[in-house]
Length: 146
Length: 146
Image (cartoon, rainbow over the protein chains, first blue to last red):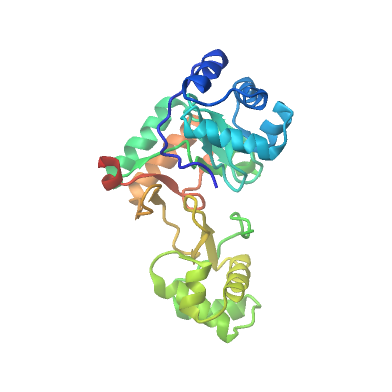
C-alpha cells in the first residue's frame, strides 16, 4: 500500500537540499536513506522500489520503508503507471506522463497540453484531474501503427 | 491478472444479443455465465468481480473465471479505477470515467470533452490515450473545495 497521494508535497530542488530537508523534517539520515534519496535524484526518471533498492545497494524492504517515510514528509511522491508496480520520484518533478499499454514506452506531456487536458476535464465535469498519480495510458505511435 | 485491454472488442447492444453472442463465440451458456452476463447488463455501471458474484449468486472465483472468458471473446472489458479492484462492464459501454482519489466518486466525461483530451494528448505526444482502461483520477468538486 502506498502513502495517500494527497499528502502535502514539500519538494526539494536538488539532492543537497533534499538531504538537508530529511533532517529538517525530523527524519534520521541513515546511510540507506541517504542512498535512496541519491538514487531518486540521480535517476532522472521515476523508479520502482526494486530499482531504488538496486541503485541504493539495499534490500527492497528497506528501500520501500525509506520511500514511504520520505513520502510521508512530502519529499517523494509515487505514481501508478498502467499495470506496473508503483514508481517513485522526487516530489518536485510533477510531470504528466503518458504510457503505452502495449510496450511500456513512456513520454512526458508538454505543460501546455497537460493544461489543456486539465481544463477540458474540469469544464466538462467539475473534477480536477491529477495526471501524475495515475498517468494517462494508451498506445505509443509505434504500437498504434502496428 | 486481467485479460490484456487491447483484446478486440465485439460488443453486444443488450442482454439478449449478449447471451446469443456467448454461444455464437463458442462458449457454453451455463447458468453461472448467464447470471454474470445479466448482472453486468443490469447494473448500469461497472462492477467489481465481487459485486458480480453477489449479483449473480455465484462464488467470486466463478465470477472471475466467467468474466475472463467473456473478456477473451470481446464481450466484456475491464478498467482500473484508482487503487480499486478491476471493474467490469459490457464491451459496448466505452465511456471515459473520471474518479475522485479521495472519496471514490465517479463521473462520466462528456464525449466532446473526452475527444478534446484525446486530441490534446495526441497532438503533443503522438500517443493515443485510452481513457477507459486506466481512467483519469483527481478530485471531485466536493473534495476539491474541502
